[in-house]
Length: 290
Image 1 (tube, one colour):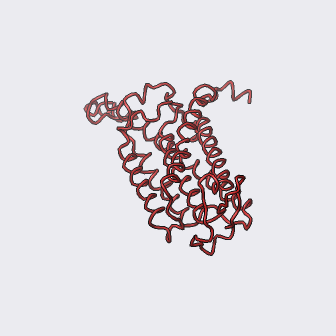
Image 2 (image 1 turned 90 degrees about the vertical axis):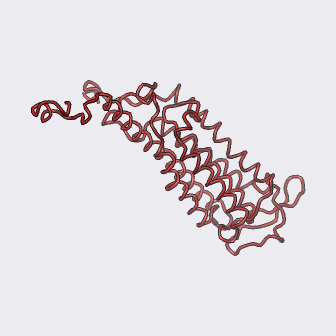
C-alpha cells in the first residue's frame, strides 16, 4: 500500500511504500538479492580456505618426518586475517549489479533453499583440493623447483626439525625443510587465496570473473594492501613471520603457481554451468514420493 493510502489499506498491507513510488520495491529486492549473494560469496571463499588449511595442516604433519606443521602459527594468523576480516570487507560490500534480478540463474530464492548451493560446494571442493595437491607437491619438491640451497648458511630456527640437505636427481645439493623452503610454501598459499578471492566474486557459473570490478573498489584496495604486506612479511619481517627473503625468480614461481587458481576457477565455472543443476524446491508431489 501507499503511505498516503487509507488507514485500512495500510493496516492490511505487508509492505508500505513510504515514498509512494513503486520503484522502491525494485530497489529493495535488488539490495536484498545482493546482500544474500555477498554473504554466500564470503562463505564459499572462507570454507575453501578452511578446508585447504585444515587438510594441509593435518596431512602435512602426518607426512612430515618429525610431525612438523607446514605453516607456523603466526603465518596462520595472517591467513586468518585475510580469510575473515579482509574477505568479509571485500566480498560482502559489493554493490548491486543492474541485472542482478534478471540475469540467468538468479531467480527468486526459496526460503527452503540451502545457504550453500550445489555450485558453491563444487567451488569449495574444487579449489580446496587443487590448493592441497599443489602445496603437498611443494612440500616434497619445493626445494628442487625453487632451487633452495645452503642449509648450513641458513639461520635455522629451533622449530625446523625436518631440515636436511639432500641431493636432487641431477646431483645438486638442496636444502629440504629449511626456512626458505617453508617461505615459498607459505607465500604460494597466501597468493592462492588472493587469486581465489577474485574467483569467489561469482556464484552462478559466470566465466568472466572480472565483470563488474568497478563495483568492488574495496576488494581492489584490500588486494593491494595484502600484496604489499605479504611482500614486506617475506622480505623484511622474517624474524616475526618465520620467513626469509626470496629472490625475483622465486617470487615469480610463487605468483605463477598461485595464478593457476584463475584457470581452475574457469574450469569450475564451466562445470557449474554445464553439469551442476541449480537447487529447486520440492513440490508437494515430490514430498509424497519421498
